[in-house]
Amino acid sequence: MSKRLKWILFRARLAFENRRNRAYDARHHVETAREEPLGDVGVAADAVKAGNSFYRVTWGWLIEKAMAELDIDASRYTFIDYGSGKGKAMLMASDHPFKSIVGLEYAPGLHEVAAANCLSYVSPKQKCRSLKPILGNVLDYTPPPGPIVCFMCNPFDARTLRAVFRGWRARHDRGERDIRILFLNMRNIAEVAQVLDEQDWLTPVTRDRRFVVLAPKAQAARIEPNPLGLAAE
Image 1 (cartoon, rainbow, N blue to C red):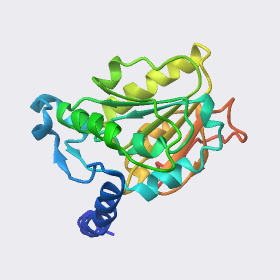
Image 2 (cartoon, rainbow, N blue to C red; image 1 turned 45 degrees about the horizontal axis):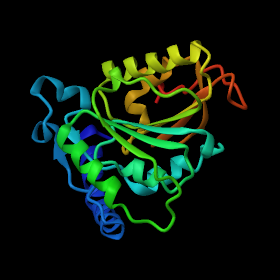
Image 3 (cartoon, one colour; image 1 turned 60 degrees about the horizontal axis):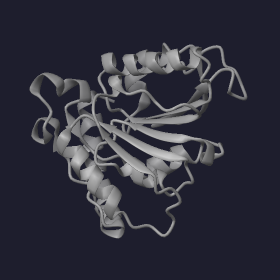
């Protein structure tokens, strides 16, 4: 299938999912669905590319599907969304009993919306009320001690993504090894195959076309010699 046809089909899927996104917003008294060019929400022109140029909300069903594969005691973990946008993953994570939830966003306009959403969110299922949206560069952030879940939905260019993974590996090598990484891409995680396949310290807990849950090899129940093997796709 050609790249052009794939993009046409993806745009059609976006239009379909937009109705679901807006219904989620209305139900929970938030605003996450509207797409935003990063240059329109306070990101400098020379920094737009690092965030893949555009804000687009992650589909709720995909977040739920990935999080269902974590298989952890959430109360022990801090959930950290790297590139949190308007905070949808934070809000959905708060329906689980995480110790705390952090959202990292470098676009001032998106951060302001996320902060407002964290205050206005309404859900009878909400179990965690410690929501902390943070404005800043993910490369300047140090996660708190203890177990962490790191969530991303294709938020960075390859250079930034590699730097984030290096930070996690350094944390692991210092002895903080209780970490789970959720990487999502609404098209296909194979788009970042080269970066993901470089992470030889990690192994997949589970994998789907649009997401993968990773854990350090020492933490995973099953060790695979090739962590993802995406490069051949």
